[in-house]
Length: 292
Image (cartoon, rainbow, N blue to C red; front, side, top):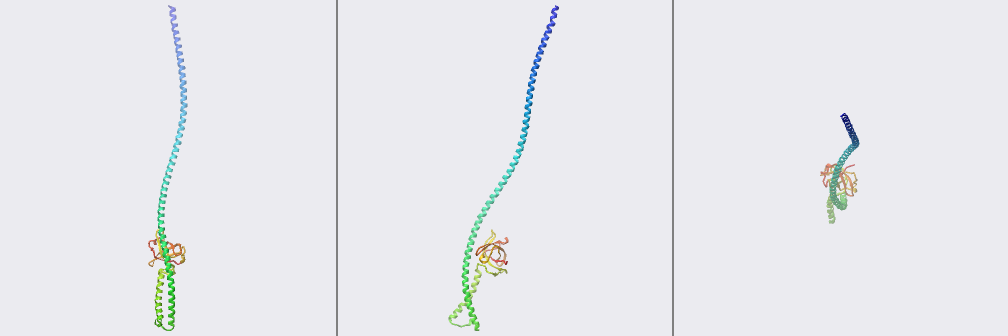
């Protein structure tokens, strides 16, 4: 009985030892397992931290890249705005250039038409001038003939006066009477021819004008109000030079001055000294050179 009582505590103690060893082993196993797990978690945490640092570095680089891209985008937008402005200016300049070209084309067509019209007028004026020159030569010839007849008449009158007898009372043969009768109308005709020559002559002669200015006198042949010049019937053979100034008279009334810019043989082109005479001048108006 006592032995039985002794064995019971021993068994209990053994059981406790076994349980303690088992618990200790289990606890150690659990601790080792937990340690291994903690180690794995720590390694995973370290890896995560490493990846986080890499990610943060990449994020910083990405932020820098985004900032650079933003700056480049702003610069690109500025350049685009500048290019758009330049493009608009070029478009405007191109449109203006096209408008000017079109206007120049229109002006050229008008100038061609005006030139053709002016050439026709100049050719007609030259023809008229040549015709008048021919008429002038014929008048000169007739003038010489009339002057010879007048001279003969004056000689006869002088002889008659030296004898104390009036020419109208001389009685001669019928042939002489007929000759005298023919000479008197010839003298009258000579005076009329002088007046006709003075009115028709296209070339200039030194005369005293109605305005009291002495110089070459002619007339206006052609007027071009678009280009502000006239063509007069005086040229180089009349002593006209480039730069000469002529006064314009309409019905003996002073209008203004023109300045010679181009000279031909029997005509010259002169520009308006002042633009206010453009609408006052007419074809056929009198031109008189101003005294230098």
